[in-house]
Length: 110
Image: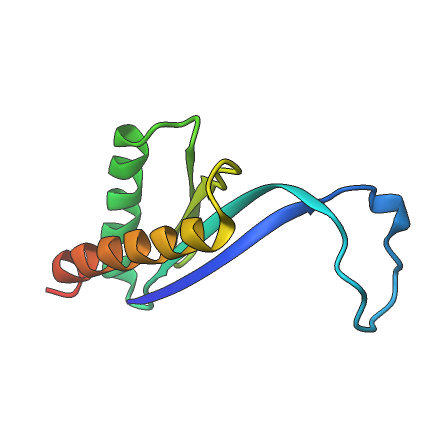
């Protein structure tokens, strides 16, 4: 099983973005969310992983978390709390994601 951790935000003032394939200056962003993508390659394990994703969706606060099932598992998204310093929030997300990965890995990998 693989874990991919990332962050995504929506660009403010999208009309100012250039449509070029060059490195651009960062633009102001808002409504950010952290992402933890749990992936598996084995078909039977993917079914199990998706089932756990569905169970998580029932347990987590839908105002904060969102689950998206994918062809290889699921993505867990969490809104970035803008009241917490970004790097602290990121570190908490990494710890949370790795802990969840370890728990899922114990179940899915058996």
